[in-house]
Image (cartoon, rainbow, N blue to C red; front, side, top):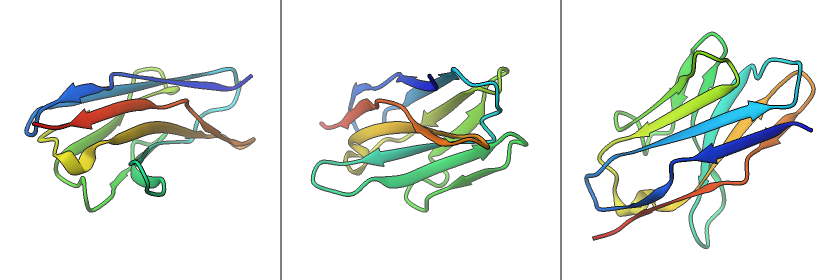
Length: 115
């Protein structure tokens, strides 16, 4: 069973930072792309950032220059460093991993930014 597990969410104040991690397992295939999505209450899930196995990265405009996505030493891991968090960043954050076989999602980790 392919599995992605997120961790690192929490409650912070505006301007603070959080680091999220995602660990994938259960497949012989490479997660050629890993990404982070988020879903705020009452809104649709939106893409935040992605990174390929070649370490190409891309970001949504809303997080550009504040968030950094990266791969771990193991290619089935991904991280999201979130700096200068704002209330608008409050959401459930989901890890996404893609292999040649399928597209997989983690269960989510909550990030709350409030004063």
